[in-house]
Amino acid sequence: MGRIKPPGTLRILLGSATAYWLSDILNPGFVAIAVLIVLFCPVFYFDKLTEEPDELDDFKIPTDEQVLAIIEAKEAEAAALEAQALAESEELESETEDEQESEQEQLESIETTELEKQTVTPTNIAQEK
Image 1: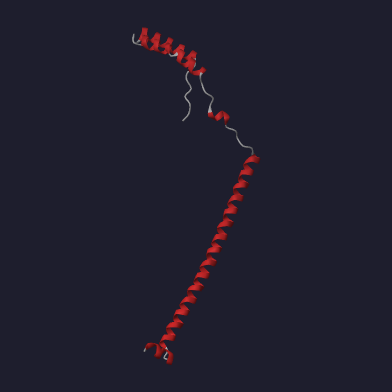
Image 2: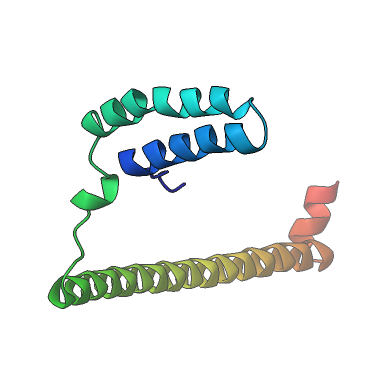
């Protein structure tokens, strides 16, 4: 939110004089408004004395070289992250291939044991009795 700029002292005094002048022409109630406006002069004066520096005064605009350096650093960081993600995906692919091979070997060994049980040999007949 932007800062509010209070009116200057001359504008306050002119506004007060105008309100007093209008009290003669329009309504006597403008005298109270003129007095209130004049009484605000010290408030605005001390507010200007105790004014804190604006936050944007300390803001420094980066040079073109600094901006380019920041962009290059971000691109390098993105490339490193991309390479890391690629390496992890290749590692996962090799793990899944190894797992698939081991599963196939287990299935083949199970099938061979079942086939051995189904074939009729003298040792199987002896084991069943």
